Image 1 (cartoon, rainbow, N blue to C red):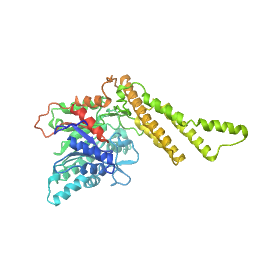
Image 2: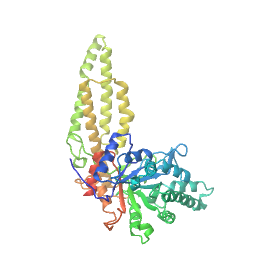
Image 3: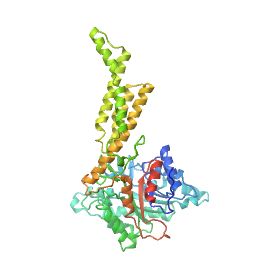
Length: 474
């Protein structure tokens, strides 16, 4: 197995926002990250924080970026929102920068609870964890402030600035009392064009944050396909003569996920810079230009196995004499017809999926319910044939999705201004992460407390952790 160790100040961060402490696979991913030297983690809610806390101890202090600002239902019930969509456009989520709500979010944090309990026991080791709380998408509050005006053309930003200042003042007081280490802003709006209603000017954040000693971090999306505004933003921070600006740590999110609308739509399918390892020794999807031959073999075997020719022939013979199939034979024939229909429908879509999510959605909404709703069980041979088909189908879909992504990037698409030809010898995730590494701050001193630019990557499986560590380390 490949082994890798990262330098102490690794610039890679495991984004655990969509991970849960109740999922064994996620536990293994975080355990692997800790063992490889990853010491930065992004969280969004108590479940993802608890997952990280489970694997930390006195010898493994970590930095946790915990986003706060959204909740589901009544205020005080914190919702878990995915890293890859701007929650301002999700109706079921509400947003708040109310001081009491922010305090409740902080005091509900497993890391903060652990810090308080350790202090009460006279043990200060857990204070070595760096707890950075990020105001999540404050532009949502800015938009609400504008919408509340009877005449939006006469909008006065002062009310939003007062709300933002009060929120930051609340977090500063929590830093002063040693409940948290520092704070910052996580904003999708920072990287949106100035004409967009959810755009949040950097100057607004800096002017407000500069009033507080513990304002230390900015978190925003940047990837090769959404660089028009994000890359100049990063460069302006790094080259600013103002120490209040160039001293900030930047955490870059969504390095491998591009949203055509900048991440503010409800049901927009993202473009993911990911190549996949295919089953049965077919290698990686970037090396294969056509649907794997092993898929065609599995497809033909499934079509042949479920064609029920013998029953069709028997039905025809019985029909000539006025006879009928037995109830068991009729049930078997109907089941075969159903499976052939599902297999044929999936086969026609193999090269059409633009994302793995849409394929998995088809399975969850149509295929799995149809199979479970019509079959109590299958015989061993039929189960094996069907299982092998779906295994190869998953590989074929992954190859098709990666190829469509590569073609889209090369030709330009998604209403985004890009046109990049990626060599087939380079996997999409290697291209994306190396592109970001090329734009890191390379002038930091070795004696500094840590990196000025951190790349936050979603890695729900331990093999993803190993692979991405290898890319970044190289």
